Image 1 (tube, rainbow, N blue to C red):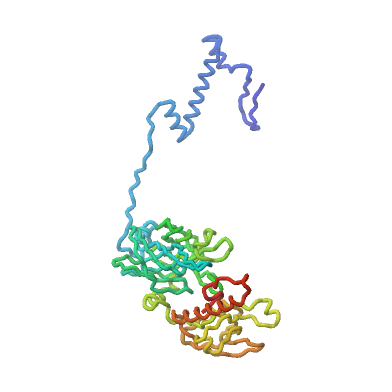
Image 2: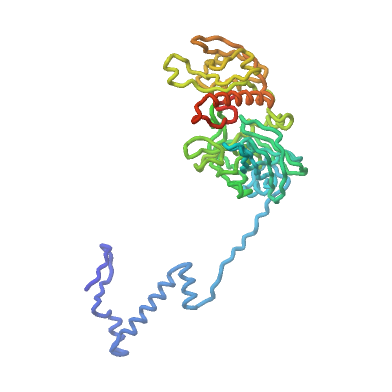
Length: 445
C-alpha cells in the first residue's frame, strides 16, 4: 500500500510498506539475509536526532537519558535594585517599588469591634477591617468614616507588627472621612498632594489591607476618570477619582499615591455587581474603583482634628424623600418632601412642617432629595436661604437661617427621629412591627 502526503503539491517520496528501501536492501546483501537489525538501528538514530532538534526541555531530556554532558541549572546574576527610602523629593517621579518602600511605614491596617443589639435585645459583637495612613508625626491617622462608624474599639497595626489602640477624634460622614489618633511619636506622615493636577492615564497605587488579613498589599493602576459624580447613598453624591487599581474588602481608607509619593486620594468604594456604588467590603466588580480626591477634603482635616467635625457645614435638621411619580399624577409637584422635622433646629424654627415639599432654593428648581442637598450644601452655617414650599395645595416662600452640622444638632435630630419611629412602630399591627432602624430612614441634613 502506498502512503501519499496529504498536503497537495508537496514533493515527498512514496514508500511501499511491503518492500524495504534501497539502502536497507544493499546493507542486507553485505551483512546477511536479515535486514531487521539495521532497520532498528536506523530508527534509533532518527529518534536521537529528533531529541537533539528539540530546544530547552528536549535538550535536557537528551542529556539526562543519553549522556553527553552535565545537567546544569541556570542562575541569574541580576544586581539588586537599591530603593531610595529617605529624603524623598516629590518633584521627581519614583518607581512603584520606591513609592512602596518610602511609605509602607506610613500605612496602617485598621480593625474595629462593633457592638449591636439583635432582635432579642442581646448585644452582639462583630469585627470589621480597613486601612488608613499617618498624617502627622504625633499619631493622627486618616481613614474612611464608614470604616470606624459604630466602632466600640479601634486597633491600628503597622508593618513592623506594632499595634496601638486608637481613639476616634471625629469625622464627616457626608465626605466619608475620619481622623483617629494613637499615642505615639516620631511617626512618618505621608505627603499630601494636589488631586486637581492629576490627569487621566496617570499611574497611581495604593497600599492597604485587603480582606482584612492580606496586610500591606500593593496594587497599582491608572486614573480612569476624574471628577466622576457618584451616588454614595440615598440623596448623596460625591465627585471621585475613578481608577482601575485593584480595590477589595479592607482597602477602604487607604491612600492613593501618585508616582511622586504624594497622596492624591482616599480609597473608598467600588462598583458592585448590581451596578451601584458601595463600600469596598461589599463589592465584586473589578476594575472600577473610586477614591475621594484629597483636594476636596484637605481643608476639613484641621477642623476635625481641632473640633471633631467640619465647621461651617449647613444643617436644616430634617429628613427628606422624593415625591413619588404616582403622587405627582394627582397634581402634586416634584420636589423634596419633609419626612421628619426636628424641633428646635433650623427648618422647624423657620416654620417648615412635616409633609411640606420644597420645590426651589432661591432661583434653583428642586426636583428631588439630591437637588435639595446639593443646593443647601452650597451655603454655610449662618446663611439665610429662601425656600419655595408647597403646602396644602399652594406655594409660599419661607426664609431659613441654616444651623451648623455639629454633634449637638445631629444628636438632637437623631433622638427626635428615633422617638418618632418607635411611636410609628407601635401603631402598626404586631406582624408588621420591626426593630427601629437607628433613627432615620431617609437622607437627613
